[in-house]
Amino acid sequence: MATDGPTRKGFGPPKPGDVLHYEQLVGEWPTRFHLRVDPDGGGMLMANASEAAALSPVGVLMAHGILEGRGIEAISADVKRAFRDVSNERIIADLSLVQQIIDDLAAPGDNYPISNLGGAGATEWERQLSAPLRADIVQTDADTAREIMRRLWDVGVPHANIMVDPRADTSQVRAIVEAAEDIGMIAGMRTVASWVSPELIGDAAMAGLDHLDVLYLSDEVAIHDALAGDGDHARALAAFEQCRELELCPVAQVAIVDDNAWVLDDVAESLAERGVVNVVFYALACLNDDAEADAAGALPARSLPQVAVIMEEAADDLFGRYLWAPPVRYNPARSLVEQVCAGPRTAGDIAVRIEADGSVLPPRGPATCAGNILTDPWARIWGNQCFTRYRERLKAPVHTCDCPELQIHAVDCPQDPQSWSYDEAGGAR
Image 1: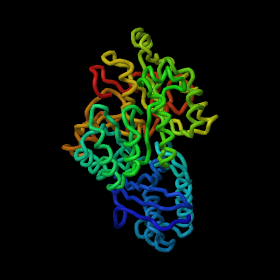
Image 2 (image 1 turned 120 degrees about the vertical axis):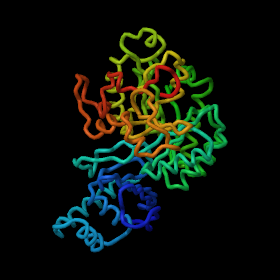
Image 3 (image 1 turned 90 degrees about the horizontal axis):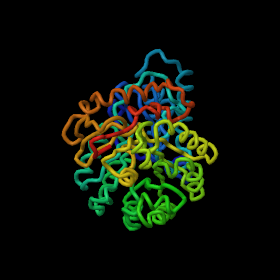
Image 4 (image 1 turned 45 degrees about the vertical axis):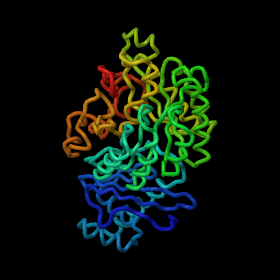
């Protein structure tokens, strides 16, 4: 793999708890690698926070050696010191496999939402994950955000996504992105287009922003603007175009409601024509017998598998990267507009939600606070009961319902309300 030499943050042999940051040029394309070592000695190797491969303990050691630029003889010696009775032939074969994983992950592209936890190089070993791979952080002041991200980095979270709050001081966004960049984290920003100015997007990109997630509901202006605000459709398209000019990865977040549920293929095609191939879908869902929520525009549970079929067929046809965030249960205490604009609690099951005060929420279920990242030890937060099922289902997803076999079932059946994010009392999802 041709490179101009790695840069990294963190020195010495890899050990549990480490997050090592490398940057390499593959041809003309820079690739940012994060190698995270979990408590069991295994780990995750991530490239541009878009692809992730699970590694065994020996795989971690080999990946570390390759990314450090060590030669085959030096890496082989490291492996022999750490693992007894390993033949030279086995070491060479495994090194070749790990090198292939790195080459595959480093393929050029601007894709930032992590979509692959089971691809090339994934293992079948039992894993003990030390932390999620991403945190969706509600906008707060720059100093608080910096401390939140520093603590997340210390426990092995390499990716921070800032959830813009239109009620907060958006002038703080650039400083928050700079803080993430200084630490070595992948930095994203999620917003409704009307909440931010082109100048703010440009400033954030100059500060090191890696991807911009923008609400997009429909190619039909009337449908989009009815939920996102007058003129927002044009602002969203302008934001996507600005991303292209800034060489910033655009990500569309599509809230699925009655008005657009059955034309998601048209929405996806419209985005693809504009060069937006990273799309996060999230449904505003309700119980099958909740007539009030259904009338307000939420989708009954029985509709979600059909919607997922449309979404996944579009992904196959358009070769896009289409992710399914946990469905959001419709909250009668808030308008449909508010809930659409607020977005999902997290952009996937590899993430956690961090509220502005530091409270940590799981991606699914009720808005149960597992602790505060600013004041509580991570072991206490990660060991909270609300994360137990989350980790178990990620390790061993099952398909026990009669729905079609779809990626949406990676963790839970979409028809099961217990798999949704919800807060019946209002507030955080």
